[in-house]
Image 1 (cartoon, helix red, strand yellow):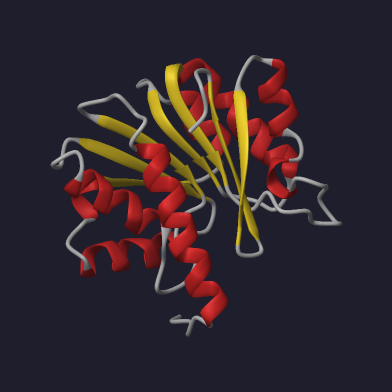
Image 2 (image 1 turned 90 degrees about the vertical axis):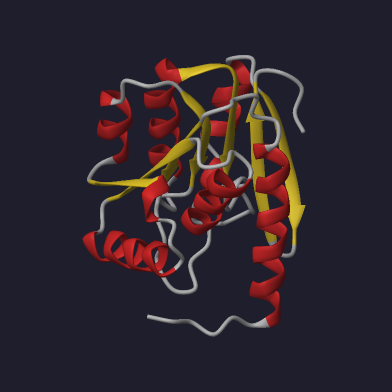
Length: 190
């Protein structure tokens, strides 16, 4: 399904790209390992495509992205979009529960992008599952942290932000065009 974006949505995508690009530049890895919860859900797609381009262009193909989603249709769409852009070689898709996949992971995580569910306890659970794979330079981004009455004052980040802060993470919530994103790291935040 292709969606025609309105001007606000275009501005939101540009804003997301700017924030994620700045955050990714803080990753001190020569071979970046990115984990994303929630893959592309509609055309034109964004995060999975963006991360794969960054691996190709910034890390010169050295690195990988694991994109996890519970919906087979979303994964199929994501694969199609990445193939159309000749970027599928940088992505490994996982179908299933993100917490289970992250827990079973063997490698460390340099960048964790939490964008799977509009339910703050799920986002917190993903973060907690990933903690064992994080190192002192790991960057975590939580999308959709705007005030959402059904989910709390920090949207998807309502539970994970205070939890991370209690564990010594520095959190910066960045305002955009009707959007907010939290960027977290153990060291000084971008």
